Amino acid sequence: MNSRLSERPQADLRQRRRVRNRILIACFFAFVGVVVFLESPLTRVRHVEIEGNTDVPANRVKSEASVQPGMSLWQVNPSAVAESLKRQEPTIESVQVKTDYTHGTVTLTLRQKHIVAIFQSAHQFYTLLADGTVFKRVSASDGFPHPILSTTKHTQVNLGQRIGNSFVVQACQQIAKLSDRQVASVSQIQIDAYGTASVFLNDGFEADVPTSELAQRMPDVVTAAAYFRKRGYPPGVIDMAGPPPYRYIPFANSAQKGNHR
Image 1: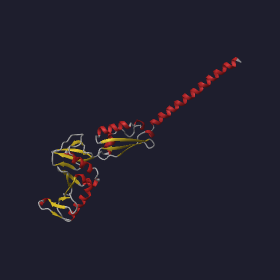
Image 2: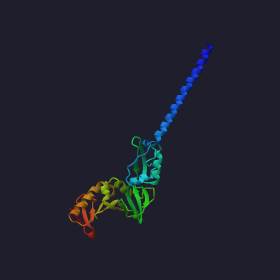
Image 3: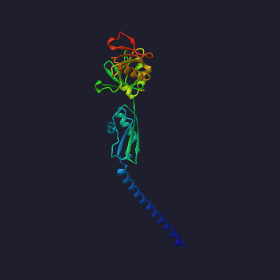
C-alpha cells in the first residue's frame, strides 16, 4: 500500500514535467513563428503616402521622414517621424502617422503653418503666417508664390512675433480667407496709415478697399477689373471705398477723376 502511494507523486511529477516540456516546445515554435512573421515581406513598409502638404513637395517629405520602403512596420515610430520632419521643415506644425499593416502602407498627414504673404520692409522680405506672425526671412531670388505686402509707414518686424502693424495682421487674416484663384490674381498689396489696402492685380489694375473688408470685397475687385478691361479701359485705379458705380482713375491721368459704370 505504501509503495503505491509513493509511486503516485512520482507519476504526478513525470506528468508535470511532460506538460512543462510541451509548453516550452510550444513557446519555442511560437517564438520562431513570430520572428519569421516579423521578418517576412508582409511586415515591411511597401508604400509611403503623404497628405496635407501644401508648401512642401511630397518627394521631399518622403526623403526627410524617418520611414523608408523596406523597413519593418514595427520600427515605425510616430513621434520620431514627426520630430524628424518638423526639425527639417519649419513650416510643418504637426504630423499624424497611420500604419496599415494589411497593405504595408504608412500614411503621413501633415498640418502646415499657413504662409499667406511676403512682407517687404526696405530691401528685406519676410514670410507672414495667417495670424500675422513673421515666420522667416527670405531672399527675392527664391521667388514669391504669395502676394507681397508693404506699408506706407515704418513697421516693426521681429522673427517669431506678430508684425508690428495691426492693419498688416488684419490683411493676413483676410488673405487666408481668399480662394487660391483669388490669391493668384494679386501681385502686391500696399496698406496706408488709415487701413486702406491698395490691391495690385496681375493684369495691371489697382483697387482700393478697406483692409478689414479685403476678403469680402475681393470678388468685386476681380469683377470690376474685368469690367473696365473688357470695355477697353487701360489699367488704372478702381476706388471701391464706396458702393458702385466705382470711380476709375487712369494711371496716366490720375488728376482727372470721373465716375464710370
